[in-house]
Length: 197
Image (tube, rainbow, N blue to C red; front, top):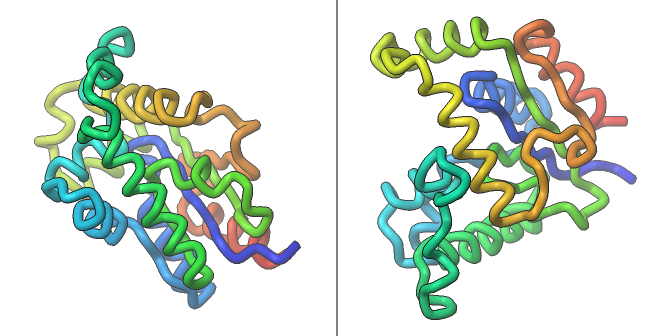
């Protein structure tokens, strides 16, 4: 079946946004990333900063307690659960609208029943991720040497809480690519080829 949607999940610093934008530009299709934050904020009634912080990341890197009190709140009243429902709605609307690349926010799981969706996971070695983060954000983000690890742990906890699946596990994706060894251009080329085949 012809693919219409590409979802890109990624480790922090692996170049997911850069690769996603390159793929979308070369294919001439839409690219969604921050648009999801804006639309999910409108849909849920939550502040954009809250949506950006908790849309893809758990409240902490402690998987034992990260979502301990979410289920104790009155059903539908938890901002975290409201945000998840808003994300699902926004991502499905974007996917229904037109061919596109969607980066992050559990889109691979949300669109898992769509046969026209190519699900990609990007990862890289620590040195490559640190170098990319330094280029994008400067040394300030790397001062805490656990920052990269904690971001990925928080993504993983968030993903597992809402999907029941293990983040980064190859069976959840059609392609898993090492952007550290392959590079940005090669990853983009492989994704484009898989999309067009």
